[in-house]
Length: 157
Image (tube, rainbow, N blue to C red; front, side, top):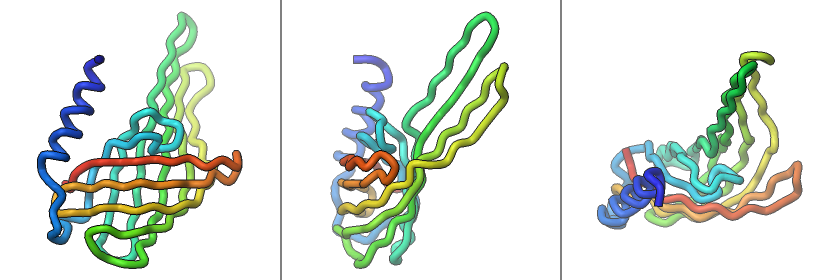
């Protein structure tokens, strides 16, 4: 098991050890490790803002790539951002979401760029306790006409 996977498992164990509380959320920000969240990532890092009202948003990074040759170097990353609507409050709550995929890249030969595209819509269920956040989601990518499931677990900041 590589170093990154060991750290991810330790974070998961810490989240589970802190318990699923029935009390209201302590703060609006959380950080989660996500499977297929952002879409296409084996493991992504996501930041979630849940105001405790009906709206929230989440953004995440799912990949970081670099290449280097004698004549050029490049670095790129991708992820997504979405807005969530929570029709009800509580420890367990459903949500609907809409979002976009985002990519950033830079190269010594072709400059820098930002890409925004691959809109998606979906929904899921989220547990938001005092310290632990957990969600299961199914989204539909409009451009590729594919459905992708995802999951995330993390903790409140």
